[in-house]
Amino acid sequence: MDTHMLTGIDVRCTMYRRRLMSLLRRAVHNMRPTVSIGRGTLIDGDVTIRTVLGASSVSVGENCEIRKGVMLINDCGGHITIGNNTSQNPYTMVYGHGGGTIGNGVRIAAHTMIVAFNHRFDGPGEIRLQGFTLKGIRIEDDVWIGGGVKILDGVTVGRGCVIAAGSVVTKSTEPYSVYGGVPARLIKPRMSEHCN
Image 1 (tube, rainbow, N blue to C red):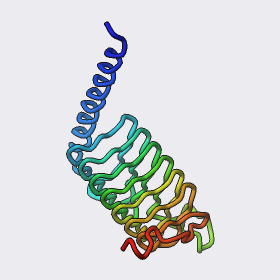
Image 2: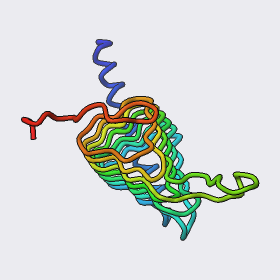
Image 3: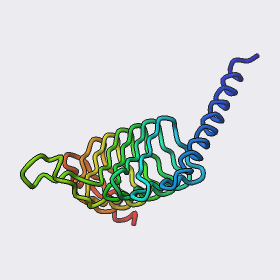
């Protein structure tokens, strides 16, 4: 038998197995009252979705991809809402304690952290005992977030933005712009005037 043909069959079998396993993982997550995963969403193995009954929730839209090692953590209240057609690539972490909303068509590269809370440290004593600020994060539609980006509490990433790999986003961004650096700063508008 032609080995090239075997390779094609092997690829199809692997693809069907991945889709079946994802369907099973989605069904298991949807059995929890605090989690909702939309149709067509692919969930790799080793994904963590953590919520507290009655205090927090995670909702993922349709046709999303949640890759290996992604963590959606919401164990201190709040919500994480992810729109349709988004991708969270390997080892992305989303903390939704202060509320996190990710729009439709958002691309999030590997090793990104989205942290919708912050530790308080303005009083005397141990930081761990001073509580949190909970402002929340909003990432609007059609955003591309490069690898290793950190997005901190209180930020809105405007529609159509590109955030360069390795950036730390501490302030809200203007729509349709490219940002990069530590802290992230405007690099340029994404579209020229004649494209609008």
